[in-house]
Image (tube, helix red, strand yellow):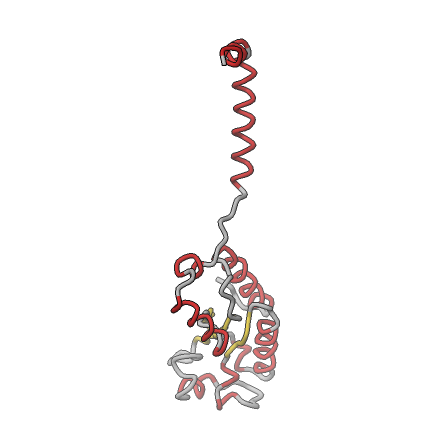
Length: 175
């Protein structure tokens, strides 16, 4: 033991430099660390009620939704507007994390229409106040996510950004 202490005292500068290098390397390594876990799994674990919830989600669909609301663009009421909305819905639905996308196209007044009448959609009992604002100035898209009990919270910002990018690609302002 005394030989060890003597070595450290004789080479104290070298020992301090080595400790500093190890500390910096550990800090760099930890700065990239991510604690990724499913919040539900972490909190509820093996709870029978949680397992039942997982079975219900697998049977009936996810309870995770992203609602994208935005000011209705002028093109939505123009000829070809429904086709453009359908293209947006199709691009969203093609994402592997998305199970289903609901839009104004699902409401009876919009089915088969060449132009979307936002006022008629706002008055519709199914779409008004949900997919189209009561004043017909805003529309919403309901994005239902695929059930995934292992999805970590850390994945959410990147997923939301990809959804925003789809809207931006259609000329819709993501802000």
